[in-house]
Length: 262
Ligand code: NAD
Image (tube, rainbow, N blue to C red):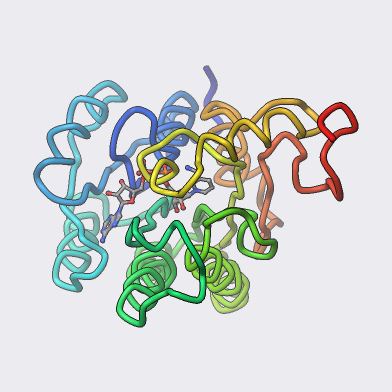
């Protein structure tokens, strides 16, 4: 397509299959000339990610569980050895026990609260700290969030709290890393049909509701999220950091559903 990211090398974390948001971003970044490495969570995901990586010209795969420091250390060490630098990271990783993404929020368990926040928020901090020394020429880090962070959406529950913490982390990391030329932003898509998306109670109803009511009368697409990421990763996004950019057909501006749906 173009060469907006020509000469840039990036790590994409969170591709589980071809529906993953991280995959939409990877395809768009590769089409603009980026060279990519992929992290996958365990062997089973690795088998699915390998052919996808190959299809965008990458044979650079690293096995990372973000709760395992040794796997994070090994991944960033191998990036340092092979590339000696890193221009961007896509952090598209989240998890919560499915049983708590339904029912009442007040029933959130201590164990799942900690686990959800560790994987879905704290991991961004661990990743940024390891990416930092490889970004001596500056860089761009993008994470993925959802509007359930600051407004209640059905059954998003503890993930809403995790995303609120993630968005705050984006601002603190942006301030920390700004002097070193590293930008940190989040993309906030509307509901998407992915593995993680399907884990949330009533996901289909939420998807249909946002599609029927968003100003664009459409949910986000992988292509639109990919395009937004390309802008944020490219030199055209040079002065944007600490930002939460919505890609949701405008749903977030609404105060009420459309009149035809009342
Ligand atoms: P997905 O299931 O395709 O991707 C989630 C990824 O997280 C998977 O690749 C999984 O392997 C990874 N992951 C989970 N636990 C991990 C761990 N311990 N270590 C390493 N990786 C781990 O789903 P997705 O919807 O593409 O999710 C990507 C991001 O987008 C998430 O942060 C999600 O919250 C966010 N998001 C999703 C939607 C949606 O509706 N699907 C909307 C807005 C934001």
